[in-house]
Structure formats: C-alpha cells, structure tokens
Length: 250
Image (cartoon, rainbow, N blue to C red; front, side):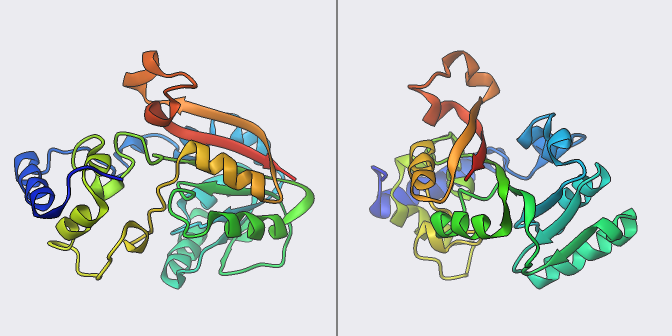
C-alpha cells in the first residue's frame, strides 16, 4: 500500500506536517463534545437494547461508556487488560453512584446478554481471536453490538498517519513509520506495532472475518461521512463511511 516512499516520501511528510502546523484533521474525540459517545456510535435505540440486561463492555478503557450504560439501567462488566484504566474506571463508578451494578475487571466468568465493542475492531491485532473470545463471554442467545471506524479507506483511516485526507494511502508504510519516529520513540516498525495497534481494517475484510467466526451478521449499517453522504453507496462505502455499526448473533 502506498505510492510515495523512500527519502522523498519521508521529506514530503515532514514538509506536510510543517505546512499543516496543527491544522490537520482532528481525531481527539471532540466530535462527541456535548453528546453521548455510546449513542452516537451505536444509535439511539441502544438504551432499549441493554436496559435490565447484563452487558460486557469489551475494552472498557477508563470506564466512561460503561458507567453511562449502567446509568441507563444495564448491569455492566467492563473488561480491559490495562490495570491503571481499570483503577480509574472503578473510581468513576464510585463517584457516579453506580458501583453496585458496574464493575471493572481484567477477566470474567459471567455470561452476558450483550457484548459491546466500540472503536476497537480497527485496532485488534487478531480480530478473529477477539470474536471467538466474545463468543465465550455470551449466553447462548447473546449478541455482540459493535461500532468502529474510521476504517482503512476512510479519509482519516490512518489515524495519526492521516496528516491530510488519505495520506496514509499515498505514502508507503516505511515512509510513514520513519516520519512517525521523529516524534515517537517506541520503536514501532509497522502499523500494527504503534500504540493501540492499527490493523488496516476495511469493511470487506471485517465481513470476511465474521464469516470465519462463531457469529453471523444480524444487522449491518454503514453511517456515511456527513460531507460525503451524497456520494455514499455500496460501491463507494469503503471511502465514504464514517462508522460501521453491526449486530452479531451466533
């Protein structure tokens, strides 16, 4: 993937960064300011789908979404592998008065009615293994409700590497990683090794992975980028989709 590489690509990226001077596309979460991230990503009906149900927030982070779900009547178990995130999440649950029905752990044997996953499937190193793990966490009639994006062909699908729209597709991985090493010192040598991981997930690839998993797609929706909505259709969806919403059943 990528056309421009080598020293030329590296220097063009450095020049682009200087020209943008912090004015480039933002992925800092400001799109959710004053809004419910859960509702924006999963749709307004999500509260009815989880009320009075046992919900696992898979990859809960610092717990804000899990706490909000608990406030809407769900019994929530937040799972994450980062202990400092779990500690913050527990404090938030206590402060929010939902600690009785909102717990945070690094694993659980409790079976859930619903597993929720948000902003994650474009990051997992092994998304198929994650789906198999989710299947173990569900009751027989349980479902996975997920929303993720941007996917790889989205204008900002490269996340940090999207200095300008689709720049992650224009430059080679080697050039982009070399440019990133100017200000990140974690030693990453490819997209999958950067903080949080980046697995180049596309809509087509996600469907292929689900087909290999214990699940089938019950509901699938691609929410178009607002400015590109007039151009959005099944032929252009890889490039015009902002959010993928999906419900999976066994």
